[in-house]
Figure 1 (cartoon, helix red, strand yellow):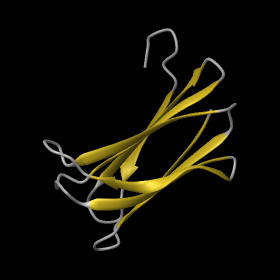
Figure 2: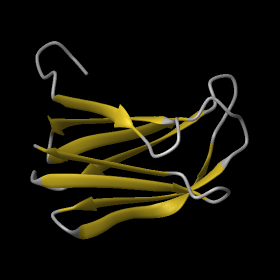
Figure 3: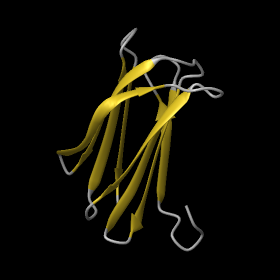
Length: 102
C-alpha cells in the first residue's frame, strides 16, 4: 500500500494456529481488498469467501504455496463498506474470519 493511501490493515489468529491479514485501500472506482492466510504448511486447501456489505464478491478454493505455506486473495470491489473474509481448511476444519470497514 502506497504512502499516499496506506489504507487499513488488520491481523489476527485463526482457530488452530494459522494467522490472517486483511488489507483494504480505496482505489480508482472501488476498494482493493487483500486477504492472506499463513498456515506454514504447503499444499493445504482452503475454501474462501469474500463479501462486501453482505454480498459475495469472491468464492473459491485456494491452496497454500511454497515457500511460506500461505495463500492470498486480491479483489477490487465497487465502493466502500464492510468487507468480511472467511476461510475454512478443507482438512481439519480450521477457520479464519476477518472483517474491515473502508
